[in-house]
Image (cartoon, rainbow, N blue to C red; front, side):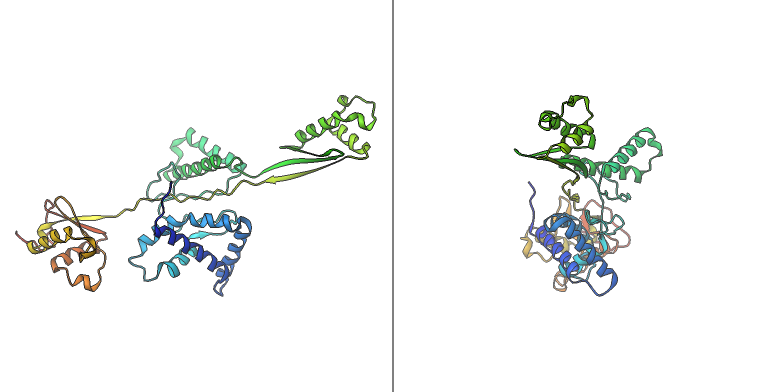
Length: 359
C-alpha cells in the first residue's frame, strides 16, 4: 500500500491546477496557445479522469526537480516552478500519451520497474505500443542477444526501459494494443444474434453456421454443406424475407496505462573535515545542540559517533548570528564546493587551507 505525505498531495494538486491554467488561460503568444490546444485535445482523447491519473503520476518527478532547484530558485513552488516545469518538461504531441521529455533537464533517471539505469545514460521514454511496435521490440531484443557486442550502453538501457514498459502494459491490461474485430448482427423473429471474430473469414464461418442451422426456412433444396460460407450467407439472407444480417469492423481500444515515474531515493553529498578545524568551545556547543529538541537548535545538526553532520545550506541572518565564525567558515567551505553536508570527524585529516585548533 502506498503512503502519501502532505507534500505529495500538494505537489499533485499543484500539477493539476497548473495543467488547467495552461489549458484555459494561455499567454498571448503562439507557443502558449499551441500548447493550450494540445492540452485540450488530450482532455478530449483521455477524458478528465484519465489525464488526471497521468498528471498525478508526475508528482515524484516534479518533487525531484524542485529538490534540486529550490535552494537556487527565487520562485514559489506552486505558482511559478510547477507551471514552468510542465512547460519545459511535458510533451503534449501525442494526445493519448503526454509524457516527460527525455531531453529535459528536470528528469533525473528514467527506468522501468525492474531495471536500474546507469546515471547519465540517455534513455528514451516509451511510445504507445501497438502490435507492429511490439514485434519491432522483440526484433531488437533478439538482435541484442545475437550480437551483444554491437549494443552500446545507451542502446542497452533504452532496450531495458522499453521492455519494462511493454511488460507492464501486457500485465496490466488484457488487450495490450488496439485490435480490430469483425462483428455481425443477425436480426430474426426470436431476437438478435451477435457474432464477433478477429477476421472476416472467421466471422463468415460463424454466420454460415447459423444459416445452415436454419436453412430449411428459405425452402432451398440444396445441401447447405455443399455451399461455401460466403455463398450460403448471401443466399440465406437474400431469400429470407424476415431476417437480416449487418456487419461492421470495430476497433477495441486498450485502457490507458499511465506511465509511472519510479520513485527515486533522495541522495546528497558530503565532505569530511577534521574537528581540529573547530575550536573547543564550538565543539562543546555542537555537543549540546545535538542533545536539544530540533525546534530549539540554531542549526539542524546530527551527532555521529566521532563528530557531527552539519548542513551547508544558506542560513537566515538570525541563525547565522548564533553560530561561531569557525563553524560558519566550514559550512561555507562545503557549500562553495557543492557539498550538501559537512561531516566533522575527529579521525579525519586536517586541511592546510583551513585554520587548525590544537585542543
